[in-house]
Length: 191
Image (tube, rainbow, N blue to C red; front, top):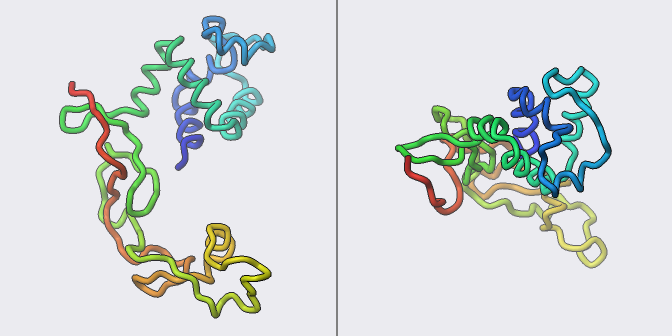
């Protein structure tokens, strides 16, 4: 689940965020500059179905940088939004506040660190993806360029194989495990 999907899901569960997202007179000056079209919404009433659908489409399609800026403005300007997002995005582990969603360093999927980790929830290949040159029939690197490129891995995964199991680039992970958070430990706030 990517950032936009999580925020869209959060907006579905947080009716306060959905009601106030479209228009809020208390927005910061920077938001007023971005959102000056004069749309009026009764903040005490839930959005009607067409407006809610349009909002969901906007959340999914807006560039991530813009979405992050809007969310950060809402957090600053509207304590209820800050509290709702805090519940969705932060959790307590071992007496410390940590971000709730991490990216698994083994499979690359997002996962909820507060959820019980189930064996087999993470499927990955411990090997390296290599080119199967014989699968690139009539491929001339002088004409078509190199075989081993990110684009070719994406467009022709069947022409690659994993060193760990000889499975094609389309095969599911050959090792089952639990998710493991990636990256160096972040500074965490003790509670």
